[in-house]
Image (cartoon, rainbow, N blue to C red; front, side, top):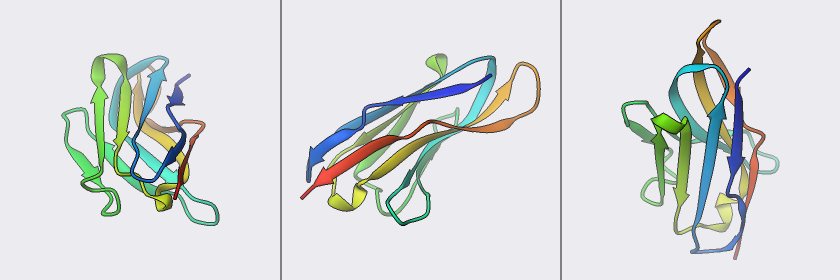
Length: 120
């Protein structure tokens, strides 16, 4: 059983910063990639950023230059540092991981989501 637990969401004023964390636990052999997605009210879930176990990153154009994704492979944890936040960044942020367990087949896992609200 693999679980992803997120933390770090909250309310912040425009221009402020937040840092999200997501820790994966369970019988995990490897995780590749890990990433963050978000879903605003009335919109589809969208990619924010992903990172491979080797550190290669990918960002959506809307967050490039403002958000930084990183990971600690030893802790199976991914982080999202969000700077210069804008009201349009308001959404529920979900952690995502492609997990290869010690037994079984590779699967996609999601966290429970954490709310990020940016006030103008």
